[in-house]
Image (cartoon, rainbow, N blue to C red; front, side, top):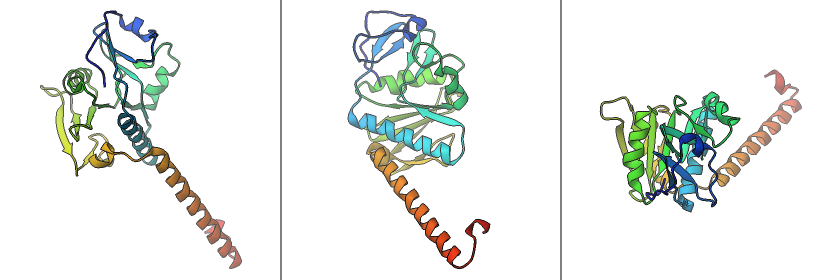
Length: 231
């Protein structure tokens, strides 16, 4: 998600890593030029938060050593660095940049498993330019979430002659990840996501109910002269 207007100021990649803008606007770097990013809408932020929640929940339940993050940069060319809306990478790759000075950016050969872009007004950046950049550095999977067109693109296999293969999904459909086939998401739910905090509260209530049920069962067994810890 970025705007199309570049600033006149030019920076090298190393200068960009330590660049401190005077305003709260975030910038990507495109061939030495600072590219201001659009301020996210509430829906955009909600989609990203829900995706991170779903990824984190899936990785925890399947015991995959992966993390899902936002606001992390990915260097795609000598003086180009993008900031995908969501990045999935290995824990070791994430640990490698935690203590690195400057902005959190994956450098060349530090390739994430998956990146997601949620489109804004300048859809050409996500559909054309970033698609080519992510394919050139062989990011295995790239999702484009388009709230206006009500569609999801799952792009995979960047090693092909024409770059990524594409699978398109629209309203009423579910879609899988190419790398995580058991992770099935609903297009409708992703485009109108639930509040993550509510989902977390529901999970906490379910855990509390299970714990209470387990305690009652243990008490009943003890009344019957049975030690529940030996079962």
